[in-house]
Image 1 (spheres, one colour):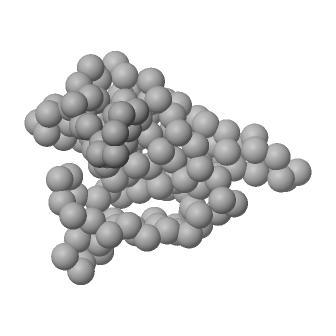
Image 2 (cartoon, helix red, strand yellow; image 1 turned 180 degrees about the vertical axis):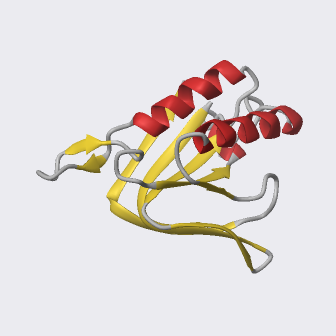
Length: 144
C-alpha cells in the first residue's frame, strides 16, 4: 500500500464540476492499493500517515504530526501509484489491486484515519480533478 502525502494549506477534489471533498490545512493523501495489500497494511499505513512528523513546531522544525496541528486529510484513490515503470515507455498496472479489493481497502483506510482526524475523500474509480496548495512544498512517498 502506497501513500503519496503532501502537506497542504488547502486542497479539494471535484467530480463532474462538483466539489466532493475539500480541506483546509493538513494532508492530501493519494492512496494506491496493490494486489498483496491487506487491512493490516492499511492499519500500518494509516498509523504512519497520522503520526508522520512533517509539520513545523514553534522553531519551524518538522516535529509535529497532522493530529497535533488539528489538520485534516483529503484522501484520493490513485491506482497509478501501483504502476511498474521499470520497463518500456508505458506503465504496467499488474501490481495494482483489483477494483473490489482496492475500494474495500481504500474505504477501510479512510475509516481508520477518520477515527483520529477529519477526513474528506474523492470518489473511487471516478475521473477527478484535484487542486491543492502545497505548503513547503512538502511531499513524501510512504509504502508499507
